[in-house]
Amino acid sequence: MKIVILVLSTFLLTGCFTVLKQFTNSGSPASNQGQRVLSARTSDRFTIPSSYNTAYSYRTDSPDPSMNNILRTIENLRTRNPDEYIAQAARLINANSRNDFDKFKKAHDLVTITVRYDAASFFANRIPDQSYQNVLRTSLAVCEGYANLIKRLSDELNIPCIVVHGYARGVGSSAAIADTPNVPNHAWNIVTINGASYHVDSTWNAGFLDGRAFRQRYTTDYLFLKPEHIIYSHFPSNQSHQLLLYPLTAAQFSSLPMLKPKFFDAADNLSVNLEKVMRVTSRFSFEYTVKDGYYLTFRINDARRGREVQDRTFVQRNGSRHTVHFSLPSSGKYIVNIFYWEEGKDQGSGCGEFVIEATRSSKVEFPTIFSSSARNPEIISPIYMPLERGKTYTFQIRVTNKNNAAIIHGSNFVQMTRGRDGLFSADFRIPNNISELSIGVADTERGRYEFIAKYKVE
Image (cartoon, rainbow, N blue to C red):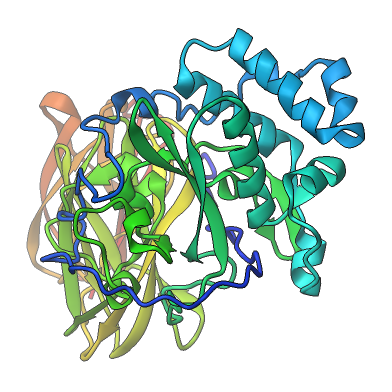
């Protein structure tokens, strides 16, 4: 049986200690706050692209090889003569780039590869000079230094770029903790290419904090990111820097769930306007569309006890349209973590978080799902437990890469009938002398069965 490793959310990087005047957003609020309406395409001071296809083709999660192996003669200038280093690096980028997107991507890669986040200074609350010269000399920076260096390289490449200040949901942020969006704590950039403007956060693309240590891990999650997606984590002090037709107020931003770019890479078209805190009775569900090659999983944690709640969340699939169900065992506050997965991969990553506040308890549980060599097994029915002794249920699952499936209790195997597209089914009356049963799949009828789901029986 394969072991599925979940890569949990880590601390994203904030903390520039830049002294800025506190800002209160007084712009026109969006008509709704949910995921379906944060999709403006114009702004009063910036031009927003009508299509992100070209920009998003550079979000490859891989650095440009030429920036990994910059010429030694140029690298030697980095500490001796930062300005000459910038000039020669820009000439190298200009000579080997197809367009301004390619140029900026290379500049972004050079910064995220060369510079490490200055975790020691951040935690000591002693931030050194964040000029691009000092950043190049030391190869260390907090967000202000990353943003300053990105701007300086962009200036040399004749690509318009500004430094943006504001609040970001980084170190110490949680859906269970109130935001302080009017207290700036972060810096990033807006770059303009071919007359259209894009958000870029090179600090968050360089790596993350694991406790008090910086872990360098290159990504392009926050490269050319759409404004309606970055607003879930970044709240600019200047409302025009939101690049939204209807800028959000601080209160509206604070009500948004904590969603990372990978969430939007995997899913869209939510059936609810998901908020940071969802107040429900005892059960809650919503639908969403999964994009080809991806899927989402969910985990519930009891906020009071600080531990995971088992068998209280379930994803029901219907083609690309999925429904996630939550059932809360008691009244109180629960933290929901969302995980992003690519089909065929054994590792996922945290991509979102929100809170459910329940006013009542529910006895409904969902079957326990196990990892296995079955390719994305789909439990169609039943999806609730405990099952009742003496009652007949129609069991249906879909597994495309297995030839056999069975209902298993003790040493008893009840074979399920295989239909089209990997659909297995069986009508089964629950015996009066069992307390649980499982669904198993195998390559052959007499082969080794792997459990994919388990049900409680009462």
